[in-house]
Image (cartoon, rainbow, N blue to C red; front, side, top):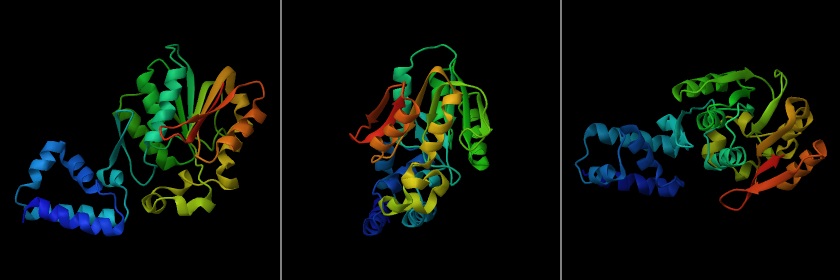
Length: 275
């Protein structure tokens, strides 16, 4: 049997199950460090028993809606590689846009104090520390196991970050020039909109929040003033339906600041800045 015959057979199974067509290729190439050309050439070869076994194993995991990044064990974010597993959310392109917004609006090399609330894999904090080595990063999370993984990612990407186990501001002291957060923001009532691979495998504590998904924003709004410097700024990722609600929440908390809703590459409300 040629490799392409086995791959075609798997693709047909995946199509019926609603599995992303590119997922099998992505996982296999990532595992073996193959380029697209390598993969195309491989398809023409005779499949070894070991290759057939591995392709079947990957397929079975994808059919169970396990995210490809968890199967690979890592994800790329802002051109950096992060270890990911069921302890943390998989970092997404929309969150890269939040990092790009922060960097575009804060080009200073001065040693700003920056706090990342709900750091998860550490993707935001590590990306900011890499792009702005003079900034002093603190990253917090309510999950101890998430912080363990974030520390691994900080070390593997050669960044120095202070990690704190904290529910939003509860265990934090001091003031920050920038506070950034991609908190849980999905309304549990919207679970039908969530992909099976996400709801079935990624940590619910990092996905869902009470009060229609606004609970963590409310907690940040209540505590941010005492942790921001006089000219401090806030940057938040939001759900695409939450722009108006989150904007009103922070306008009430910071009437002296400018609160803006920013759209993502798809034109959907995705970020809020408070400046």
